[in-house]
Image (tube, rainbow, N blue to C red; front, top):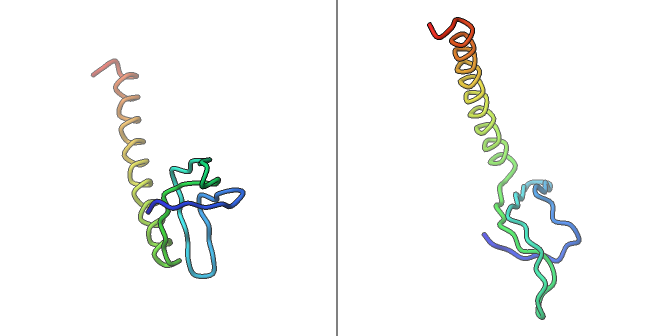
Length: 83
């Protein structure tokens, strides 16, 4: 959701007691009617956010393992002269 704010600094991630706000595409806006920030904001409860970052972390670990395997295979190919 696109929102506007007048805070001095916009935090990309803001954690409150039971809610987490994730902000992106942060742009400074200065018009005759408004001076502040405009950004996309997603709101999660803490459990949703923990699940989201856990899933992202798992995906990154899998991708890293695949990259490591591919790199090892490429190194073996190069060192063994393309056999």
